[in-house]
Amino acid sequence: MSELLPTDRVFLIRLSGNAKPSAGINRGRIEHIRSGRTAPFSSFENVEQFISEVLAEEKKNGGPERMSGRPNEIVDTD
Image 1 (cartoon, rainbow, N blue to C red):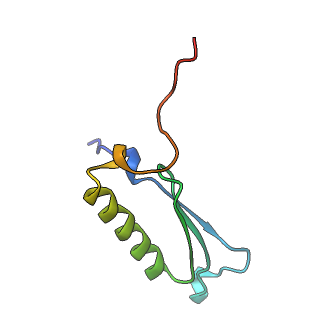
Image 2: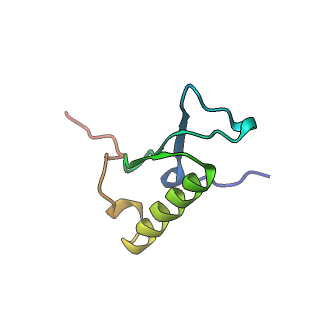
């Protein structure tokens, strides 16, 4: 079964060099790919909070096409 994975819900998580998730040391940066919005985090609870905030803002603004940030379309220059 194939599930649709919307591109407006893509996030990149980068762990810092000294992060040790197995030891509870979770540091790094999260980025919402479509908008380019980023935030540092020091716990996975911070990651969950960031994702919730971005998705709530997106819903409030009427969807990903109204959010500010990097464009997600190809522009024909011919």
